[in-house]
Image (cartoon, rainbow over all chains, first blue to last red; front, side, top):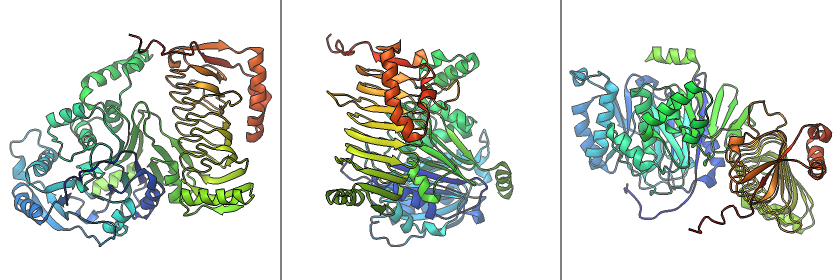
Length: 372
Length: 244
């Protein structure tokens, strides 16, 4: 795989997410159908999928999806990995030859645990902190190897191509999950390469992004100063790091994390009649200045408990939400949602800066947690 | 003529319509539409196009003549630079509706999104009209240079603004008519809020009549509530912008 092509094409992106709130698992066909409707939103320079609930047999281990530039990159990782983590199982990610997909990296997955001894003397004693630093080390120091995803019971499958052939290449119809999120890319400021396709992921947090972050410099400094070096040559990766930082480490709710990233403008805060809320908004802007995302964006983030969609404060990129039966949907275009299962019961374009959160039903989350 | 849009890309679909128009066809029923972009784009004949399903972005772009009747909601950029004709939407509309529109009418029964009617303009007898049955979000009528943008707030819950922030910001022509009030903080700089005149009242009744007929509403009931008129205070709001 090449790192970056030397050309640049301007324009959009398409996103879609489907969650079965009861936790019922389904294969890739529905999300692929949704993406097919939005062909004009991508240009074949990147597409990808994240799916949650796919590795029940390895639900207790973190699933590291690896993209290695070549066999040597994978070999270097193989040498390093056992020194940092306990590898329970590893295997090649199954693919099939697909006409429009070429120049693919070496694709491998490792199911890992964090050895107890690694956490001795570490405060707070959180294996996820250790895992994040290990992933960052791999991306930075293990030449030619990148971690595409690292959550439990989930995985990212992405590459250079349109969504349909990428799904075919990865044989995604063979996987079952309760949440699928997908992206088709139309790269704007950075080139299309396998590692730069969406979703971006760290631990349970995966994101797909349509737009571009004019605040990237500030956001990059913020996440890097918190231990997330940016290595993937695109603005979007900061958003997944941001979710991990804000939700896991700072223990903010999903809604509060989105508020930090898309906080109202000062003008609107000045006008806020509810003083408690005004105080909160002021504190959020002051505390999380580095997390504020500026410029046009629509983002779908997946996590263990569900998915969230949110847009920039001026609504410069589209995102619609819908509900039908046990399923919740988010997509750049409402037609993408119709394509899956006809007209939804409820369907609406989401508001600027206001997150729409769809969660797994409580009892299901509890039973999932129990099984882990 | 009935066209099943299943699996048709926008080029094929529009070519089929244009070829049929050239052969004298005037009525079209498009079935199973799901996300096809640019339907009706650039067509300059007075034909009727009924759409069943959900059309894609840029519906009726550059269109100059057809009457398009949708079955439900529409997405973004509908009536982009539309020059003439009619688009009837019984559901809601997405963002950037009627962008740079320069003629014709767009009727939406429910809500509309962000940036509707931005930079719409009029010239001589070309006067675009957008009517929204619900509310509009931020930047409605931004840079508006001509035409009419009417927001009715028919089923809008009290407390929900009829237009979002920066309403009419940069406006320098045309007029917005709002059935109710837009919060003062939402009104863009250089926009004045006025009471409507008897002349406006008559114009509104005449303009709303075909809207109500198309969507099964009562015009007198709508006219029963007070309207406000939003207008630019200057035709050159940025005349001094580069003067220093």
